[in-house]
Image 1: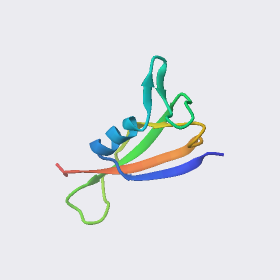
Image 2: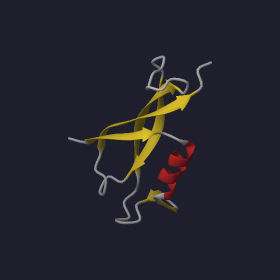
Image 3: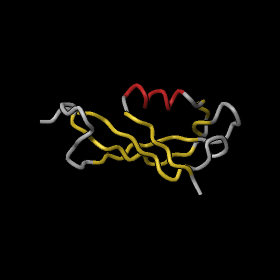
Image 4: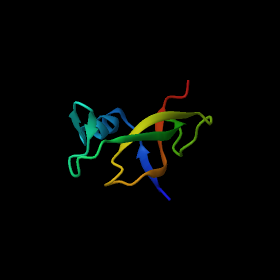
Length: 88
């Protein structure tokens, strides 16, 4: 059984950091610790309205690719997070 990961607020900087964790080789990204080929799962990102103090939104969920090492990280069962956007 996989793990559940809550990554908190998903920002562009955080997404760039995900890519920096791994090493690019001819056959794709590899883990710097164990050299395994990196896998990808879906991160379910809830969209919340920035104007509200509490996390509140209209129910929109976006799907964002989430990379992981199958050896070091295990296979995540569920990856979730959120973003804050203006209510327009």
